[in-house]
Image 1: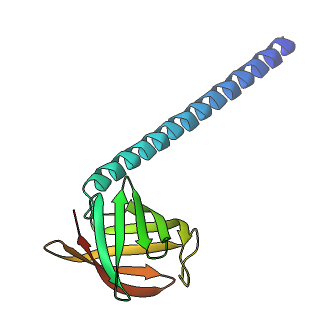
Image 2: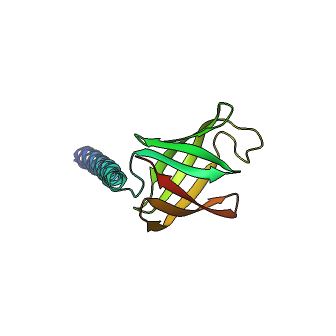
Amino acid sequence: MKKANALTCAALLLLLTFNYQSTFSQDIVALNTVTNLSSKSYAAFNSIVLESATLEDGKYTYDFKEKKILVEIKNGFYNEYHPEKEYIKAKIDWITKFKYKLTIISLKKKNAPLKVGSILNGEIIKIKGNEYFYTILLNNKTGKGSFKKVN
């Protein structure tokens, strides 16, 4: 009789342990599912923000050392074309309708304070007609400027 009780207790203990592990595993799966949904929702939210970004896809210019610099924004990328075949290319990520982040992905520009991987944080602070005034932050230094839309 004692052997039967010990066997019953062991079986009950194994059953409880297995049930606890299954429940715990299901909780982890549920948590991962929620995390994945949150990631997808965040990505969808960013797409919506990107579509309503202040600077639309198109061409812009700004003045630098008495020269007009062409800027093209297209499909989430920012490209600056300078004289003498110099350029700066960056990925543009819109944080809000007016705030954005530029991550430099390629450049050929003498004396630029940038390198591949540099991150600039910008904000459109004023719009007057076809001119967009901005501030930009790089290495804790702030700059100001403006773009004019050309098309």
